[in-house]
Image 1 (cartoon, rainbow, N blue to C red):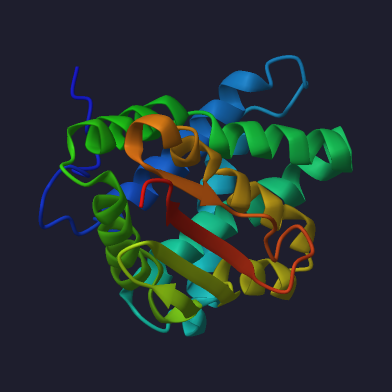
Image 2 (cartoon, one colour; image 1 turned 180 degrees about the vertical axis):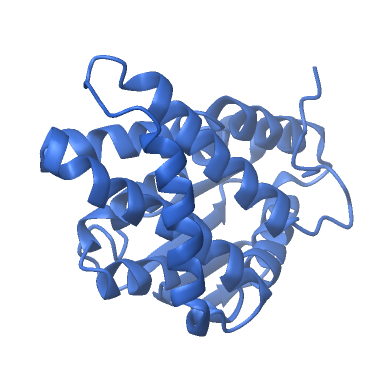
Length: 224
C-alpha cells in the first residue's frame, strides 16, 4: 500500500490542491451515503447534492480570488449543501455530527500515516514540518487566507491565521457552526507528531471556528 499518497516526503513538496480537494469531497459524500442507511433518505439524494454543489460553485465563483480558493470553495460548499439537505431530516446536532465524521474520518488514517512517515524519515523533522506548512500556506490555502508570522526562526515557527476563507464562506451561507468541522480535519496530521521522537511540539489552543480571534499554529523545538 502506498503510505504517502500526498507526496509529503518529496523534498520539493508542493500540494496538489485539485487532487487533494477532489479526494476530500468524494470521500465526504461517499462516507455520508454509507453512514446513513437508517435515515430513510430519498433515493438519489446524494446525486442531487453533487448537482447542487456544482450550481453553488458557479454562483460563488466571485470568491475564487486565486486557484487554491477554487478548490477550498468546493470543499466548503460541500458541507453547506449537505447541511441544508440533511438538517431538516436529521436535526441540527445529528447533521453536524454526521458531517464531521464524513469530512474528518475517511482520509484520516492516510493523512496521519503519511505525516508520520515523513517525520520519521526526516533528518530534521521540525524543519521538514515547517517547510510543508509554508508550502501549503502558499499553494493550498492561498490568498483567501491571511497569515501573520510572529516567530520564524530555527527554534520556532508561529503562524497565525487571522482571516479564514472557510469561515468567511460559511458565514456568508449562514452556516458558521460548521467551521469547527474544517478545523478538526487537522487532528489527522496533528496526531502524527511525537514530540519525544520528532524533537518538536505543536500547539493550537483555539481557532476562529471555536470562537478565537485567530488560529494559532505554533511549532517549537523541544530540543535546543
